[in-house]
Length: 156
Image (tube, one colour):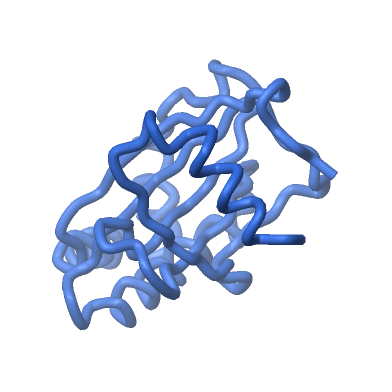
């Protein structure tokens, strides 16, 4: 791919509509990912971003591993991909999770079910400790919904 001509095209077609932009490069954390059986895109995706306190990246990853293991052990019917920021992204989240969604109904929150899952896997005290450690490791979190626009997308 000729990145120079791609950059020139982007600048000439979107430059006047963009105040600024930043590049963030993420790495897939395969050991913390529960992928779908297909590579097809879903119409929607929930995207959660976590900003982690400086120096707490290992703690966050260790805690998320416990959460991931509970989901896998209980065979919860959810798929997700976990990413870690590798480079750039001055204001970008340190960790991002993408959850494919087939429809709006699939976005129904299951928070109580998740707490029960942790209680069953680690006991009430273990679940509370996990949430406390999780909260202490991060500074903020965001939740977004992405909508696939096939008319604006290139999918090989």
